[in-house]
Amino acid sequence: MAEKIILDSDPGHDDAVAILLAVGSPEIDLLGVTTVGGNQSLDKVTYNARAVLEEAGATSIPVHAGCDRPILRPMENAASIHGQTGLDGVDLPKPTRPLDEGHAVNWLIDTIMSNDPKTITLVPTGPLTNIAMAVRMEPRIVDRVKRVVLMGGAVHDGNWSPCAEFNVKIDPEAAKIVFNEPWDVTMVGLDVTHKALCTPEVQKRIENTGGELGVFVSHLMDFFRKSYQDNQDFVDPPVHDPCTVAYIIDPQVLTTRRCTVDVQCGEGPALGMTVADLRGPEDPTCHTQVGLGLDFDRFWDLIADAIQNIADGKGQH
Ligand code: PIR
Ligand code: CA
Image 1 (cartoon, rainbow, N blue to C red):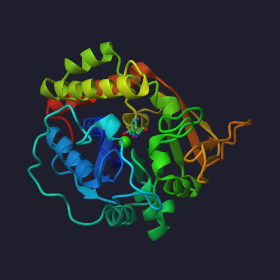
Image 2: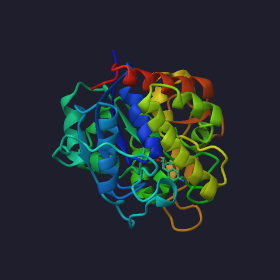
Image 3: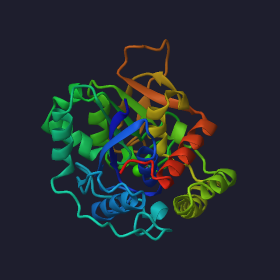
Image 4: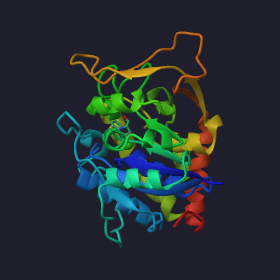
């Protein structure tokens, strides 16, 4: 049985790859994509989500737009990394269908409550605003979802401040809500995703996989590489968001450890830091776990396979 997931995202170059990985993997049943203001404005990332699904030929997958700004704080984007469109560097196909009606938070709640208990995995790859709002509006979803596998945070790292990751940093109150509800949460943070580097060898392989779609992804990576070289002093860009989907397809992709995670919301240099308690012994009943290691080869194999599947018409439509 394919794993039912909902991607809550802010595409974004790496969000786009996460969407393609989900669409092209038979182990995943992508129920829908919800969007949130983050890498760029809500309007732009929502357009990008629709265009990426169009590129993948997956035009039956619903897209619902959600919150356009963090719960308490002003909107902040990552144009320095993802460009003015949020997905600079590629020519996007025009969506052939309208945006679905209904706010993402309502759609998330309705979808979770109308499916069997513990069958849906939430996969947030942007700020956690929509998920936190859904929890407050319908607390029963906490018991009802199977688990949450999110890209965000870090145990030992930061990219938007010395010790905070972007998705958590820009809406830390939302992240605090999500980590403190008693559902099963896996934090796939920078400790993992900074290992998911698109090396030149990997990029060549992608470019030669699945014809036009592989070239599309390679062009995304060209822009992402330049951003990361200019702004973050990386040689190769880390492709964060698909690490979540890859872990759902194959748990062996990550090494994980159960431990508590809380979010620093007080003003000051640690704002948005995820504080993970790694002091032993590990408590196997803890509801949160963090990803620490990545199987690099397995990760990129899954992405190449997904691109090939979509190009062969074997992706989700
Ligand atoms: C934000 C991102 C990526 C890089 C920077 N520097 C800032 C986006 C990605 O889409 C990912 O979900 C997360 N936020 C990584 O911090
Ligand atoms: Ca993202």
